[in-house]
Length: 348
Image 1 (cartoon, helix red, strand yellow):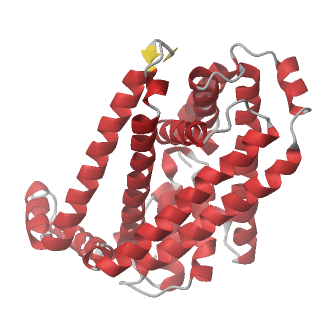
Image 2 (tube, rainbow, N blue to C red):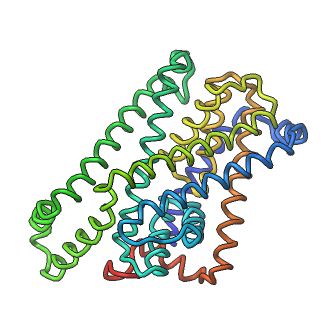
Image 3 (tube, rainbow, N blue to C red):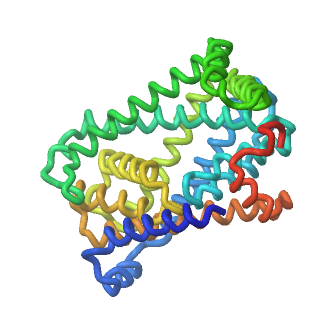
């Protein structure tokens, strides 16, 4: 584990957590936990689990042009990889590709390429949610509310531009890798010309294998199924927050409030990937429910704490279950995350 990176992540996490707790007394916070209707957490857990099932079904479609892997075979690398995202810098994405390549004899590069396409669809869905909120509930961005001196409207504008830029970049990147692979290889080889010849062969091999993982982009029917599964995943994610609205008996239980919350949380945990999203998740909930939707601050803070714990426990329990079930070595998993990619970039 990169301890320096972990230390920085922990510092950021506690800074974000301090922001959420700044105006709240711990006595009031613990008292608020006693008023929560915990029975509503059961359907929340069901929707969280459904979102991960949807991700496994979608991942199978993304891998289908390379190799048809059953959804059940994908649950273990998926959940262990997402549990690996507890560490800084979303290292779990590399771990997912590593575990998949090791078990099903795929190259790491092609396996990781499928996750790149998956992230593109997630960005598209997140941007669609953001656009919906911005268009139908523009009033939430027109308030005088600010976070640390930055207006909500300015934050929304910056995020919108960044989302468009990231989506555009990924689409262009995937297009070039799929349709103009030889051109990409020539340019990359020119850039690394000063390096030894063995590096040229290695880079060319990695590009070839990575582009193989992007072959799904050539199959419209598969892309359509991936898009449908993406809708299932994100509907489940959105609905997983709704039972907490009733558990805390929020004043505004509208769809608009729910989508504002989801967008705020996703923006914060994406921009500030703290370990286990601690702090960034809580700050997103506080901004959405208190700063924007004007719920009581103690309620927003308590909501963020309970929702974070539930999401964390579901991910941790399922991840540990598959580590035990698949007889994974924890030491090997940590070493894989340290490397980021398997040695020689080939099969794990």
